[in-house]
Length: 249
Ligand code: PEP
Image 1 (spheres, rainbow, N blue to C red):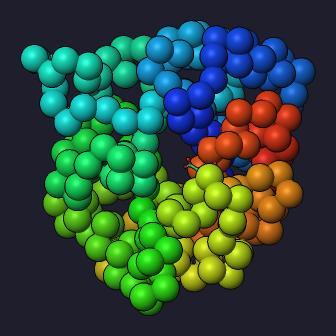
Image 2 (image 1 turned 180 degrees about the horizontal axis):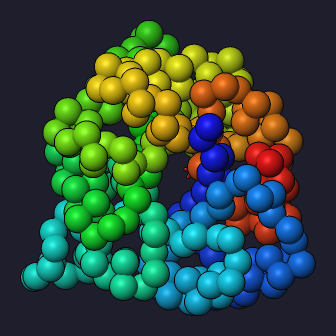
């Protein structure tokens, strides 16, 4: 049985005050026991968030990392630094990184390997554009992105990832995939995982992301192959995010 994971992605938003607001709310809110919760905060807030959530059942993560271990890479942040600050997760291959910062499949693979080398759990994001969907290429795109990473990893490494299916046309647009659309892609991803190993398909979490909010989380999370959510905009509102966590319980 897969434990659901609700992961917030603050993107380049938030503040120390928002870290504090979450920490205070978590003192009085009982999260469902069978739900894992994480917040992917901007780099500067990682240390403060890890300290603030130390006694709360909320893990901290980053939104990307360098593919290099150390050196003359001005402005970059390594996996070792993230681990040092208390991060447990790191997003890799988010569509904004792929489209705005030129991260291709090879770069995504290198970042997954850098995360694994530092004991972090990579949350590998997969998703098609609207153009890809309308051309009937959803599965080809998503399974291609999956293969670009999974074909290069060993069985033990594959088992350490979390996947997130995020249709690009649903991210930040208010346009959510229907539960049926999302379930169909999640089922296709899980079937492909079974080609690597049936136990891998059974164990790996596949999150849905794309305009998930309190009002639609319940029906998405009720789908058999949706194991949680990657939540952007709604993770900036404490009440909305905690309501999504409750609906996963
Ligand atoms: C995201 O950033 O991964 C995301 C899903 O954003 P939103 O929930 O705002 O669509």
